[in-house]
Image (cartoon, rainbow, N blue to C red; front, side, top):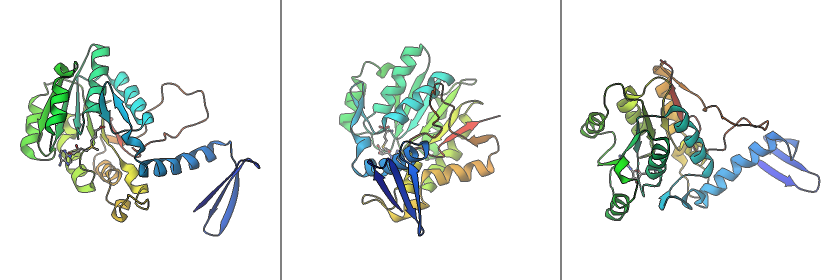
Length: 255
Ligand SMILES: C[S@@+](CC[C@H](N)C(=O)[O-])C[C@H]1O[C@@H](n2cnc3c(N)ncnc32)[C@H](O)[C@@H]1O
């Protein structure tokens, strides 16, 4: 596909399969096409690797950070579980929301919590709200350890941001979905890999081997979950599509 931005004619020309379409550059459709490409170019430039939350690096883009804040504030879970901690910025984000809401705590699971990351997290003022577990997020003993920290009747949200193969994410979905309470979510992050297969830092197999494929397969055999982009609490535009690295990620438990 070719996209030609013509700022003089105020058009976005899209050329694909021998067809050429000139769109109004300032239309919703142009914004979405440019944004989709921006996500790919930005990912290759490591744009998700330039942010922090209250002192800890968070490997997400601002829109995804804002969207998860909207959902956490709406659902107000008792427990937020994140698989894939890295530097811990997302754990701190969730803990900061729990602190501000006066409700909730956070469990982080990672196969390797590096000593400098553990030290920084343990020294953080929000650490009292956080439990760290080191191990493979899909290993039965780790899953059991996480589940032992959840009390009956608690509202739970699970965020999957560890190993991003379809197989691993499917394993996590199968292992943790029974914790999710109706109205809450299990989120298979980074499904944008399916669009990143052809960027310089991407891999060809990502076109099928990605978290979105896992979420779609999981939802096809779990009718108690639906994949849907969470509603935006505020929208004074005509826009409807999130500019996100988490397409087909949000699995909401409907019953
Ligand atoms: C993309 S990073 C997580 C980023 C973090 N959630 C954030 O928002 O800043 C992925 C993390 O998953 C961890 N990981 C990889 N394989 C794993 C596995 N099998 N189980 C648990 N964690 C794993 C890696 O060690 C790495 O720290």
